[in-house]
Length: 425
Image 1 (cartoon, rainbow, N blue to C red):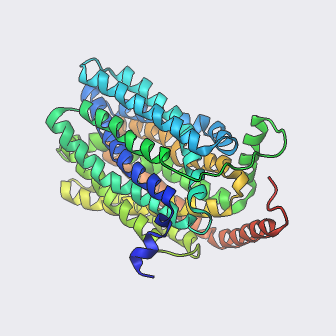
Image 2: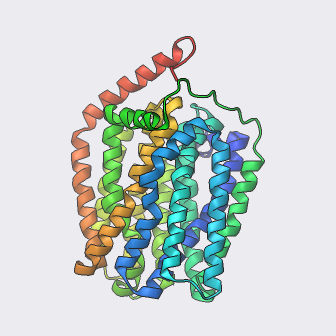
Image 3: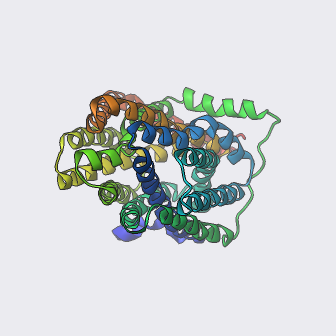
């Protein structure tokens, strides 16, 4: 099998091809909106604190509501949940476009719509993560997760660059409008899917609160899952907020405007795409724990180096390994956790993953924005990178225990699946 064939194994499934194509178009629009929204807030206020506030409001609902989203993902048809959430996101994008193009937008509007987007994401992310296995099965799950990451970061290269050009030429509102239109691609793909088999309903009459507790209990008691989630949570809390501060760094530190933000964000996307394609070409789970440790160290060290740069193109180059490291860590963590999670609990465990991946980021954005007021945006990024680097060193010391625990969990899952009737639900 050639390298290209290994990378694209999951694309042999028709439903996944529809999902992949629609999401790719939609995510370009999402990245356009993300960059344009940050620049709009910075243009209106000039405040790093408010950049942090908007970032906080767009993601904190994931932290608060993802457990409920996980229960919904394990009980309802995941396909229908995603249709509903993607439609909601489209309407929110059109609302922001209308306000901006009409000249009536205020920071309060951006914050309110960011909260609405965060609520939609709290239900969308667990359902979308858990839906992958329904499209490709366990055989191609690892490859599909890596391809999803490639899709996100291919869009991350194109979207910010388009946003920078569009904002500079005709304003932020058209980026928001383009994002709204882009959702039509993913909705069309979802509606065109065939042979979607409904999952058997969960057994028992446990309350939603009890089912939420089951997901947290599994993530907390399963040592490898717990350690992976804690490392991801640290990277999201202390490392990921560099994105929130990018408009201030581009303007105050590097002397560029919205076009500079687009190029800088595109550089992280190039690195992240390379990381995702590297993972997609792999087969099996062997060595992923070591990859996570090295990737987290690269993510932290890259941010420290970036914080000292005062040259635009050197900063662009330094963001490539930053994007590469974070993508390897995020996608490898997702792969290992999904591989160890029973299907009946997948939505709830991925909700906990969402809390660590996206839910911690708003607290980090608020913290980074506040720190930037006192020490400057570049130093705030460097401090976050140092915390991630220390976390990576601690994680590396836990690798032997992580490997042993992962083998036990996978062996237990396989033995349960081999029993008559399959694993308990």
